[in-house]
Image (tube, rainbow, N blue to C red):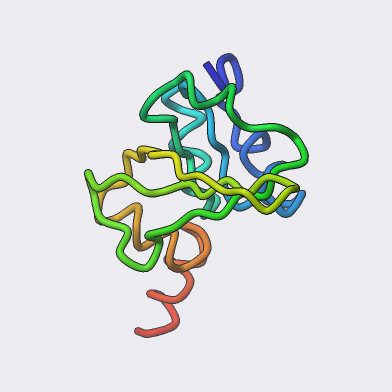
Length: 119
């Protein structure tokens, strides 16, 4: 349960400031998942939790389907092995329409700043 016991925003900010774009896990603590979204990150879960064991540290990961990110629509995680072989894994998200606007803006704070500057 990733983020359990860590409801503070600093835990999500750390991922962002370390250059992370997504956190892909078997399950999330609810508040931490929302904090990741506010930071403009992608909290994703494995549709099939056993897919977690198919990924190795040397693998390269690409997330497909971001241009059409839609509430309730799964994304595809493309896993490329060092040999060049690749396979796809289904990953789920819990974004709603408002949270998708945060993601597209880079964070909830960026979205608010842009909205305020437009006035």
